[in-house]
Image 1 (cartoon, rainbow, N blue to C red):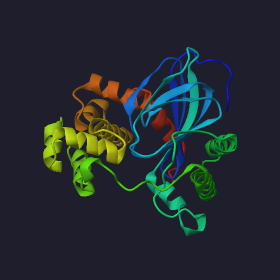
Image 2: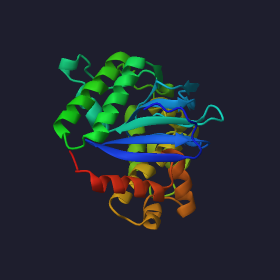
Image 3: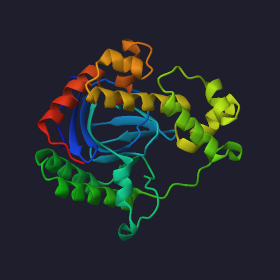
Image 4: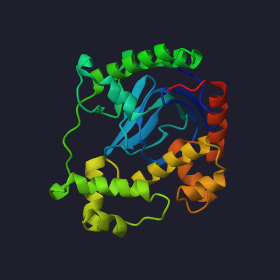
Amino acid sequence: MFQHAAPDRNRADFTPLGHGTTLMTASFADHAFERHSHDCFAVGVTTYGIQRFHCKGTRHDSRPGDLVLFNPDEDHDGSPGTTAGFRYAIWYVPQALVRDCLDADAGLPGQPYFAAPHVTDARMAAAFGRLTRELAAAPRESLRNEAAMRALLTGMLTRHGERPAPLRSPRRVNAACLDRVKDYIHAHSQRDLNSAELAEVAGLSRAHLSRAFSAAFHVPPHVYLNAVRVARAQALIRAGIPLAAVALECGFADQSHFNRRFKGSVGVAPGDWRRMVCANERLRPRTA
């Protein structure tokens, strides 16, 4: 999994691992991710160079063998920490699969949550690397693969997880009003939303909503909106919808805007992502 030669270009490959999980193996010479978030868990290992990112107000430098652990809706960026670039492998894991790991037998009741986005743990990093290679090589062993994925995720949460703190936001904002804003963003993500509109939904001032939303969900409204749009775009691309139609359907102003925001969040342009993901999925059986 670890490589010693510096990347000479930017590249990302996507492989379905089954059970809704996608593996991304990436090599970036100079690409910088914009501030973004995902609607799923992102669990990975840096394999070369320094992967520099900001999350929760802190700069992190992830080196080879370090774990990167992002919770859903946790905004972050990413760029090379040196001129040598960086590489990493990461799973994008549905929230439902991670929640299913936490039952009474695992001793981890409640909602799953990683305590820190950057952890040094050679043992878990090695286990992640071994299982990633096995999953990529044995896509037909669905039942076995799912059990192995659950075991690894449970181990990571046991060592590096915690139960999330109760919802907190400035001036004791009612959680229900913030949930209304999230639901509204999902329902109207194809439109050009503005802060006044969202503030009216919440019954708050624009400034108060921005602070409360960010405090409650660890991501500001505009970053959350982009994550919703990108996730919907990925689903439509998988369904075979032309990219120009996807851009309009998901609320992007034009193809250039779509390309810029998609690449800033995913690491590759929509057309490249479509070729890599759809080619891999045609070669692999669909699993639950």
